[in-house]
Length: 257
Image 1 (cartoon, one colour):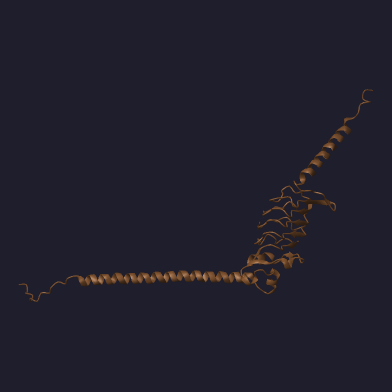
Image 2 (image 1 turned 120 degrees about the horizontal axis):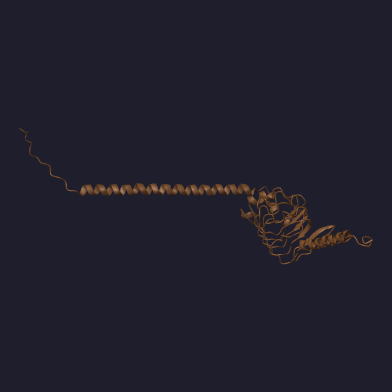
């Protein structure tokens, strides 16, 4: 009789456990969106919108399932190695209109599988490490950067899929040859120029100049050494000439008895 009206604790336990899981899930969602960004749904997926938030570095708590990450119009100056390594589902990454000057050689590791668009336009990038973008199959925007056109840049861009809508706006701010300064990079490459061959020629000339300098120093030292020895020899000869000579006796030598 006493057990008939007693309520089983199992439904209460399940309900409490479900509430806890729901609370943890909500807390997880709230904590996964970096401040001061917004993380709305984007076509059924996660989008992380951090545009114009005054960020000076890339957030480290971006949701792992994010497919869109907008970091444009901030104050980011460096993209470190492994900055997006956890974001294997990321399809679009916008880093345009920042202050980016340096990029780590492994800055975009982990993005090769899903990334479709990488926007690095309107930054302060002069040089790009050879391996930084090499494994990406994404469309890349590099326009409006003060690029230095040299062998390393040509090798870095050799197999990249540059955005066709902005590729003509990628210009040589400086170059190993003055004639290409201010000209579109594509125009320079289409002309058949190889910045790598220019680099090798410059290196060879520098090596020849260095070798000639060393050779000239050796010759100068030999000439100085010979002249110094000649002067010493002349001084010694003059000294010997100045010594009084001993008189020679004219008396016949008497034989010894």
